Image 1 (cartoon, rainbow, N blue to C red):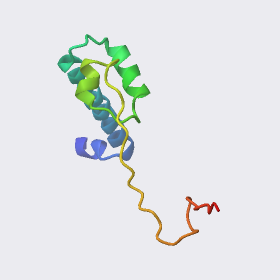
Image 2: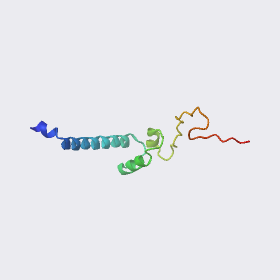
Image 3: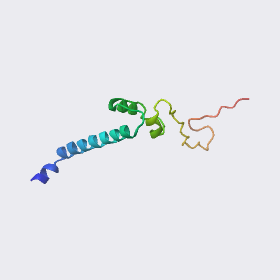
Image 4: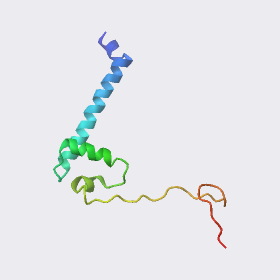
Length: 94
């Protein structure tokens, strides 16, 4: 009977959500513990959200958040071999 209760889809998703929140909090607490900056937990979470889509070395940024500049990623888009097609139209200047 107990197994049937845990196999219920609603209970499974509630349990998975609780486990995810616990793991997420443990990861953030680990980052706070390993940093040399002295983050408060709320500031660390806010700054992580703010810098979510920037390319930075995480450990440099955690230790020195105002000194670590974002790096520019290399382009992964291959140029289209056909002239005149694609986003980058070549303009002929004469």
